[in-house]
Length: 236
Image (cartoon, rainbow, N blue to C red):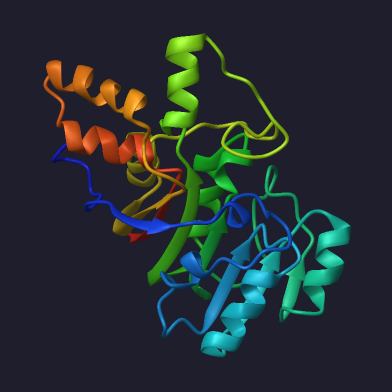
């Protein structure tokens, strides 16, 4: 990141194939790890079936409220969480809670599905405590599995899951994540990268070419290897 961006250095954390695309049913220990232990009220944005929130409740004893628009998933989440709000994040303008009510909010693979992710963050920031934390899991479109086929084979093929999921509306790089946080009134406090497998040798040559243009080769490799970024941030 450029020096004027408020994101610290990347720390890699492994993720297995089974953890990529369980949007509705899977727990996310990597997200839970970044939720402050002292958070007593947590909003799980796009909670799916409530597995993440249920695990947070067991881990911290916090009150967990979920937001989920799909009835089948919300039905399951209601048995696991303290409350589930059946609201459409695409059109959300307010919550039935006072300002500053939540100590933490989680966005597990949510923002890439939004027509206006900036607007969603601005809307929900109002309900976050002044010293609260948001934790976001966001896929990285610069991952080598996207960049290499695009540059070499002229392919940018959508699929039913993964980085080019057909339901992804916005695509993010680390720079764009930093810009979004800055523009919506947040500053990053932690940054990690989930990595599926090492960058193949033939793909690593892309970092060599980037170095010719003044980029740091190892930094380029790290970003090519990041399948998704986990970012914790607080209101500025």
